[in-house]
Length: 160
Image (cartoon, rainbow, N blue to C red; front, side, top):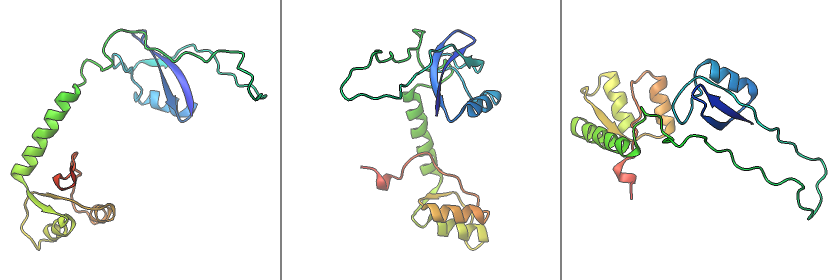
């Protein structure tokens, strides 16, 4: 892992970790690195002091150098980009999605994989269903070409 101090075209500074220098370059080339303050994808490495470790470790001798201060964001704006929804908006949208799925689909529970396979084979009437499936069943359905999608919420059966 490698840590870089980064800077966007709006002069916001922030730090981020990457698997390697090549991974950083590849992500930047694909516009996958963006400023957490303004959302700009025009990001470059900023100057930073090198981290130097000593080879000698002494028992209880305090370090000659103080611990480095944590990196700070240099702007006083919200950490979310302006076009990002607030967490409350996301929760409301998820609740609406859940209500829509529950209203317009049949819950088949743990029989989801069997029911989806029957519908795909033409042995059961086609309809919108939702339910639960383990990893192995999900993988098998996808490998067999059964069109399924995960839902971004947990089953009510598993909720406390």
